[in-house]
Length: 376
Image (cartoon, helix red, strand yellow):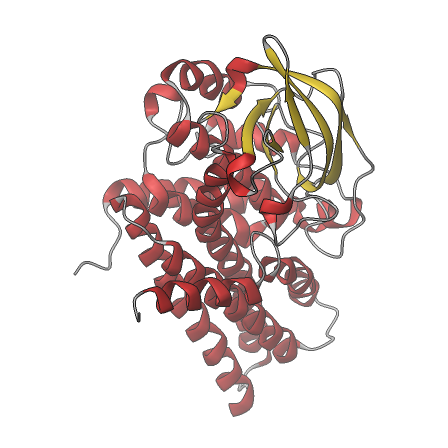
């Protein structure tokens, strides 16, 4: 068993960390206050191929798999969680294109996504009345002669106002639930695609989160991903892999908070035993969560089923990260220092990781369901 990263993964870790510290960190606080979307930073990430870490180099990616993706995302999240979520969702859309797209679709859409002036993807699944129960979505796609006409609305769409490609799930068969859903590759410039007002969020304030409305939006038939009726499978596959990313993101945020707390303790000198124990608990939780994330990423790369392991990694990593940031906040207290302000931002940013791409409660249901299958 090997616990050290091979050289290609150490290299991308270095690239991501250097970019995060030199480019993202100096503006992270300002971005949080101004709610400015990191468009220029997204372009820089694309130039470094970090918008497609697991994508085959022939399509413009790095080909470093899910472990490489988790390693890079954690580094980005440690300095700017808003930029990290933009990167995470774009990687998710690219991953689904690589996994389910035809050769023509991959050649057409992946290089264009990474080289676009807006090298950003959005994932459109949730709706006002179907969040946790994704199979209950009501956005409709009606077949015409050579296209599909999409009508409905999507909620909580990350980067929806800035993306160049949106992966949208819509219902093509009213008689079936999950099997009646189809995935579409939608250009936001299509007529009928409209973006609502940006959400005023507690955390990730530099990330753009909007509602998207579809009013008879015509999507060419060659933009169906994986075939009609397979959209639910696409969505669930995306969420399995995405949960690995959310775990890495949460742990990057927590690592930032623990490091800030450590700097404060060193400055104060002779920290109390209680403060030392709190810091030790925080870092232990972070490192434990990271091992679970890496295990799920490893299983993903092996091509086996990893729904249970991804859910375990997501719930443990995000819950541990939230606890670690809260401990760091208690250690530092209301000092008014730069570190205290950083941890306060971490506290707001990390909270949503327990919610999106499946709440902690849903992850526990998924884990139990997978366990009980093997106990019959």
